[in-house]
Length: 65
Image 1 (cartoon, rainbow, N blue to C red):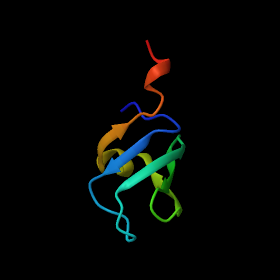
Image 2: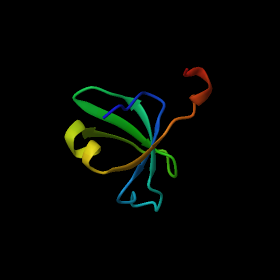
Image 3: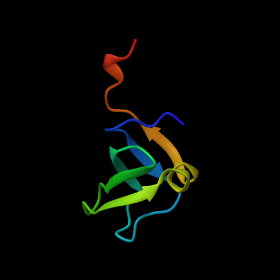
């Protein structure tokens, strides 16, 4: 799955604060993601995060060819 730093991930299950959109801060064996609702940052194993992604939203669509 092609996930990049700065992408917004819409997840299948919401965060306890109520939102289900997270921003990717770091990628590797684990993903560091920030909740866009409350700002909490969490580290999630890659396989668990990729399994729960519903949609990837890219903000930098203008720089791609």
